[in-house]
Length: 113
Length: 114
Image 1 (cartoon, each protein chain N blue to C red):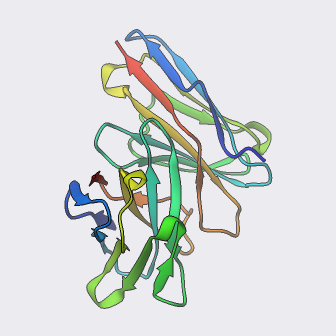
Image 2: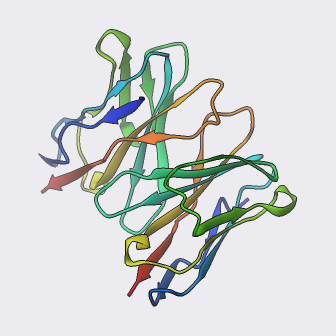
């Protein structure tokens, strides 16, 4: 098992464009999380999936953000009409249902210009 | 609301010196507690965690932390710093019966001087 995989690692986009990030969790992990980390800050929770069900969304997740986890496997996070304030590192993490430890991917760094 | 406070955004120590990174949490229910380390442009790696049982927890790379309920603290220590310990350290909490989401502190950058 290679751990949690995120793609792309880096994305530069122009303001107003849409972007989509992918996360492949550790296989057999039912729980999947997205976090956002801005420079000099700790990660902030965005959303949580158990299998394919999105069970919690942070108020940070505006209506321009949407996340999916079809079939309970990989997940995508889409940002529509990107703004400069969306520039951040987007981290994905997964964990087994019965475990409290989360395993993180290397993140996708988004720069909106 | 639950929160995590890390005292000191930057800590500098000499190689071989004691490392002490402070973490306090605010919560009305017992938390699960974690320390993660992050190297530049990388994801987070778990150093250690406390869920139940022994309050002194040992982790990887010689780090340990002690859960003190009366002080609502979970400070991270290492007896002797190594140059490779230079990184960003995050304290985090989650709660039983919750979604397992983590609430992070703002992080502490550890600098190790030769």
